[in-house]
Image (tube, rainbow, N blue to C red; front, side, top):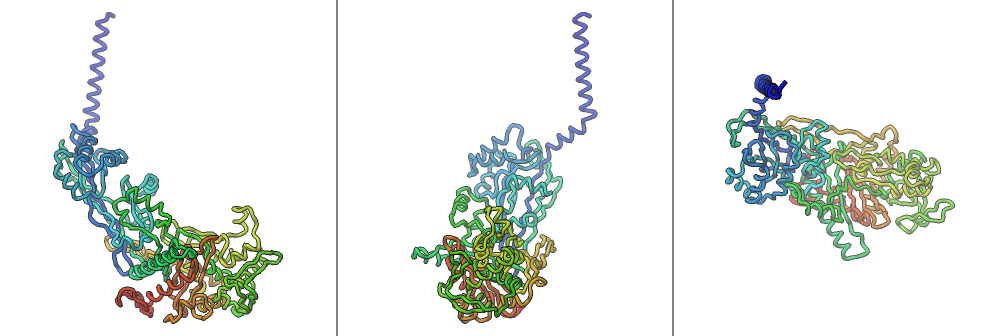
Length: 627
């Protein structure tokens, strides 16, 4: 076969192949490629959903959202003669928007199709919105859409409780979407507090408008709309008027104590202060304060790196919620646990007599003395008075007897019965569980056995024991209610945007010792706490003198090797316990500084003291008269 014939055959084969391919594309795949070409003329424009609001128990709005505008890039609305990079460059040259940030958002977008919007910038200024509107002819493909920005109406109140929002990170994006939620890069999500704890309720579901555009990216018509769904609202147990009064009180005392310490080098300088008010009958948190704090509106638009670094590098750690994220020894408040174990296991009774001869206690065959806070011997005192006086010698003796009888495990066992060493379950993220040390823990972590001195130290709330203010609130509530304590709960109701109840949190008993611990035990503990406040020899009586109703409480000064922590946990009224109040001053020096704060909180709650005006009373002394 000559060369010409071979060439002719090859040409024929090529034409057959081209014809076959053309027929395949037009006849068999024509509809498919027609749909693709039509798809290039479709844009999906976002409709943002507002985040749910946060209300106090009386219906006052604490956190809301306000109108804002976001900037998007619609890739398939960019003319073929242009590019995204060119548009971004042009925009940055005539506006305040930085090109580097716009390109970063563009390049980091997880958008997979040309019809989906790419978020370039949030919360546009009015000036930039005007510039974009006036230059639409040279900025094709840019879309300004209504959005919402978090509005912390009281940006310096309830800071650690409400928490803040921030841009979603990669780990959150992966985790949330694995759970079945539809998040995208650039979304804002809860980062702390209730904003984080209830993210999947507060976050709404975005909508979309599907439109048809021409070759120049101009809208021709709307094809369909998917309406957004607003996030659900949170209704709290917190009474905002009480909360505001407590915050004002704590801030004043915190600043005064720091000022006094600055003037006297022998005084401790507090580094933080907290207060909790809890409803004993339900576990509802009526007020929760932790200072120092910060301004929530720093986070509303997205905090700058310099502002964030300043916060996290502040030595006073304002980002820390000390009610849940700080665990320290409770000091003498733990004597309620020691007393419970002693009455249940050693046969101690309310009138059991003890004798403190010289303010020191020696473990047999040990040379090191354990000392009372009062260096002078207090003589004869019964068990109830030992609580009122917070006499260390009596509780050293009880701790040592428990060690001899049970090899050191009983105190830890009773501490766990009261919920210490485990999270309370309060509806806030990052709660610490604290620590109840025992022989097993010590061998594992310190490679040492449990000695008599460990039980003696533990008996007065020292050593490796660590507790949070929420755990102490649960302990006090359990004693006040004679064996029952409810889960601490901030949110009472989750309500949908349509007004329907999504979820209601009923009181949940988490500690129930009524079958394990005799009523006589709680009666003795409560009587001791009553005398702490009301008897002339009680460690808190000086600050509760002339108090209008019977209250009860327990002081605690926890040694740390440096400055002491100051505690007070109490309840009122004594005859019919309704609220628990816990005050904690980090590095506060002495419980003498926490007690008067607790008194003022009780005075305000029951309407005996007024920080604003007579209409702001929180609770008139009769059940059910809440405003």
